[in-house]
Image: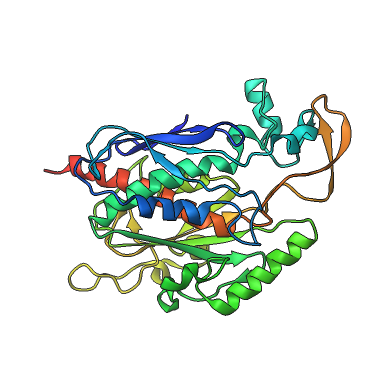
Length: 354
C-alpha cells in the first residue's frame, strides 16, 4: 500500500497539490545522532527549481521533524515528518479535469478508484518522492554508523552514455554540475541535450547508476526477499522507472558461465564482481552496483492526441511547470530507496543471528 519495508518501515502520505507530503518512519533504532542539515541537504538535491534543467516550480522543501527525536538523538519511537507545499499552482491543471494525459496514471487511477486528482496527478505525482528522500536520509544516517555508503550518478541521458567503469570516475564530483554526472565533458553534452529537448517541448530519459560500498556479506534472504529483488522493488516503485539490472545485468546473458563466474581468491575475495555484490539473494561483501532506467517524462509542452474522460478524441497541450528530464533530481531518490532497502536488510540480519 503506502508502506515500504518490514523492519525499517516508511509510510508516506500527501499529494502534489495538497497541504504537504510527509511520512512516518518506524524501526529506526534508538540513540542514533541525527544531523538535520544532512536530511535537508538530500532534500535540496531533489527539490524543483534548482537549475535550468529542471522544472521551475520553486519549493523550499523545508522538512519539519515532528516526533521521535529528543536532544538530537532518535528515541526508538516513530519519527514523523512533514514537508509543506507552498508553490502549487493548481489552476495550471484546470484544463486536465476532463482530459486524460497520454502515458500518465490518469486513466489507471480513474479505473481503480473511480475518482482522480487532476492537479498534477495527485498521489501519482513524483512530489511523493519527497517523503522517500527524507526516510532515505534517516536510513543513510543509520547505515553510515555501519560503514555503508551509497552513491548514485547519472550514467546516461538519451543516447549520451558515460562509458567508464565506476572505479575510474571521480565520484566526489557528482554534484559539481547540474546533471549529476561525475565526468565533466559528458555532463556538458548531457546538459546541452536536455536543453535542446526542452526547447523543442519534448522530454528525454536515461539511466542512473548506483554504488553501495561497505555492505558486509550476509544481508538479504534466499527466497522471496532476495536483496536484489528488494532493491528492484524499491527502484521500480519510483516514478518513471522502467528497468533495473545489477552486476553485468542483461549483458551477462550473452556470456558463457566460464566468463560470468566470479572466481574465489584466498580469503573469500573474488577476482571479478560480475555478480554485482549479490549471490543467492544475499550480499557477498563486494561492492553492490546496479542501474535504473528512467523513461522520458510523459508531460510534453507540445500538442498530443488523447481522449477525454468519456473516451472521445481530443487534443492536449500541457501547461504548468515540468521537468524535461528527471535524471538530475532522481539521483537522490535512487540513493534514498537503496538506503531504505539496506536499512531493512540490516535489521533483518540483526535478528537472524545472535
